[in-house]
Image 1: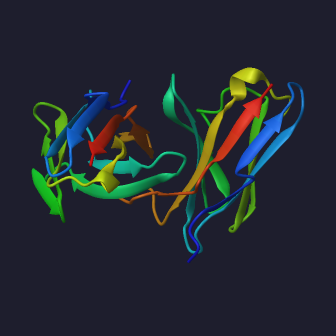
Image 2 (image 1 turned 180 degrees about the vertical axis):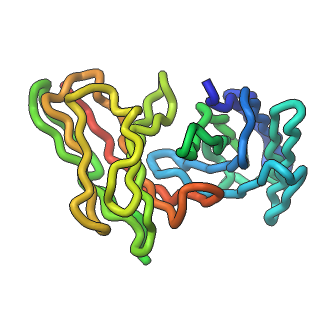
Length: 113
Length: 114
């Protein structure tokens, strides 16, 4: 399966601390995306990193991609209670003439005030 | 834009009944996706459309599931007959293109089949 796997499954930290979530996958990808899902809501796109990129920043978010290890990490700096959510990595890969985005099962992040 | 709109937000039905979920994608988006989310299996792609044409339905679990997109602004996912194992949250998403583009998700429909 191409499905990405996030690690850890759950993470609990204090406000102000940094949160790091990891994603591993199995086959070649075109890009990797991170999404956030608040409880009872749809997924919201956070950041996309292409296979030829190694690092990308967006505000308090920092994403790295290591294609040799088939892994990515999402770092949220100076976390806030409002960052409490599930975070998913999604790998885009090609299947024949189709491109498919496959989601992992997510990391549940709890930021305690 | 209002974003992707789904209805109903919650649906409770009895086993054997027909269920129809609805989606309005973001205007101008050529791709529409239907996903199912459960604790056990995570987020699974069921089917996606390009310019109203179904492209890949390999994720549709069985013949009880069908999806249509009669025009660029409306899609339905139908389950007939429904079974308790169909209980899940169903998401619709849309995007401007397939490769290298983010997907915009609707709020989801929580389906409970008793």
